[in-house]
Amino acid sequence: PIPPASNFIRNIVERDLEHGTYANRPWAGAPGDAAQQTTGTTDPAKIRTRFPPEPNGYLHIGHAKSICLNFGLARDYNGVCHMRFDDTNPEKEEQEYVDSITDAVRWLGFGWNAFGSSHLYYASNYFDFMYRAAEYLIESGNAYIDQQTADEMRANRGTLTEPGKDSPWRNRPATESLQLFREMRDGKHADGSMILRAKIDMTSPNINMRDPAIYRIKRATHHNTGDKWCIYPMYTFAHPVEDALERITHSICTLEFEDQRPFYDWLLENLRDGGLIADPLPKQYEFARLNLTYVVLSKRKLIDLVEGHYVSGWDDPRLPTLAGARRRGYTPEGFRLFADRIGVSKADSWIEYTILEDCMRETLNESAERRIAVLDPIKLVIDNYPEGQSEDCFAPNHPLKPELGKRTVQLSKELWIEREDFMEEPTKGYFRLVPDGLVRLRYGYVVKCTGFEKDAAGNVTTVHCEYLPDTKSGTPGADAIKVKGNIHWVSAAHAYATEVRLYDRLFKEAHPGAGDRNYLDDINPNSINTITAQLELALKDAKPEDRFQFERHGYFVADQKDSVAGKPVFNRTVTLRDAWQK
Ligand code: ATP
Ligand code: MG
Ligand code: MG
Image (tube, rainbow, N blue to C red; front, top):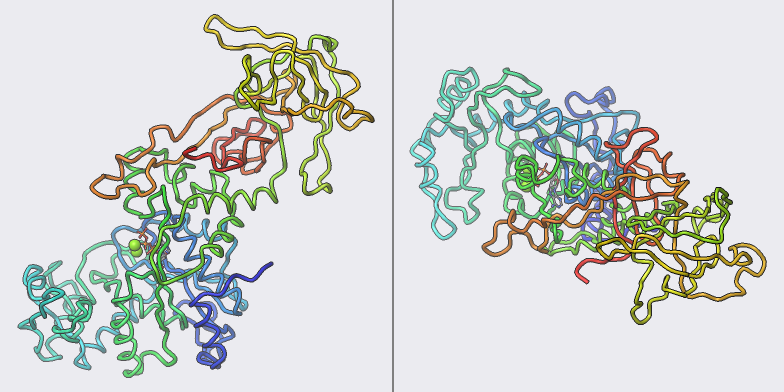
């Protein structure tokens, strides 16, 4: 495989490896880690990264960028990427999300077996340590209990142009804060009545350094720790601690966390000085999140789309969730190619959705076997073909891979062809079937059109033709008669009729909700077209998630959920070429 292009994060990693920044680190494993038995040895991993989703929703295409980046770095530099659930917020997290996230990461081709240990990390396993770290900050004069109201705290935080004001509780003795913090833990105080804050600088130009909150009272049952705690750490405090405990070397996040980096460093340096964690400390690096045209990539908006029944569920093939993309027929290889192609930078930008589609086309062109499908069928009757008879034609399974061989498709007197492959009054440059014209039935014979029938509404229902017996594809002299058009077909007596879903974009605007618009008003009302198509018989045996190119149409997948054995239904993954807004 071609190594991924360099980017600023790879440069940082390579420089660290060259300088031995993380060489010979003692490795004791993280709390609860199977690798803890190796206490006293040095870390066998050259680097450690992590992918730390909050289990409060399904992963989307933006997360795929982060997954490919973090797991890709570990893969390429002899490191380990920790699959970590950032589950420090008790309220919104569910096992359903944990399961869907692990499924999605595995599906993308990444795993978390390394150096003899297989381990999923949960931030909530570190609550005891986080509590001790908070007590240490209080004892060392670096944190205090604040009893201002939420409104007072907001007012005293200041603004971008105005410094904040010290809380009246800021200089209370450490012993008093410690006692109150323990009472908080013991459930002696009401939710919201007090909060633990870091003591840094209320006049800092960076608002995140103005004594950020680090622990709050919240009576809520946690999916892992149950009712053990009624206080929970804030994300900004928990995250650096998680990284440090797991001995992460490169903690990579999106740009909106750039202003949090000073606090990340402040906290870890303090805990290191107190002997709670050891050098070398993890370092945070920020990259630009993925913005993709024609989709929304925000868990909140995705939740709205699901709960508002704009789509059929989290795995609706039109959604940019990884579960949806999978059902749509998108490939893990395509996502990895996409991640390499868009690269990693520090500048925010929009990526065209067609780039993702091209990556899917490229990978599917390689891997998908060819089949024949007639999506908008009309009858073609070969009047000079014997009634009740049929014969084998041979169609290659993959034009680029002759080793995949050929399969037989049956030809008989009555065929299905595409409505658009016949034109009563042809336009200029139309080379398919026209009255008195010749066309090749792909893998079969040249036929000559002899007439057609229409229904009362004037729509063509049946086309008549005669075949030229000496022209069968693959037989000597088959090409003696040259024709410009070549159309696909399936034998009506040997066809499998089934449901096929033709998807279009869920949003009709490139930037849903831009300007004053509500993104819900930008939904494309015609994002799904369900049809009954006539497919070649071999497709009846397709298993859920089998992917094919339907010749001349695009790539299709047997739906993962709605297919039953012997009766698959198909989703269009992507057309052969970009047909959007032509
Ligand atoms: P959302 O913004 O959609 O609500 P999130 O950032 O809250 O997502 P997390 O579960 O916290 O979701 O994210 C896990 C990881 O995925 C984080 O490290 C985050 O930086 C990364 N991530 C989330 N969205 C994107 C995106 N659009 N592009 C790249 N990385 C992303
Ligand atoms: Mg988040
Ligand atoms: Mg977010």
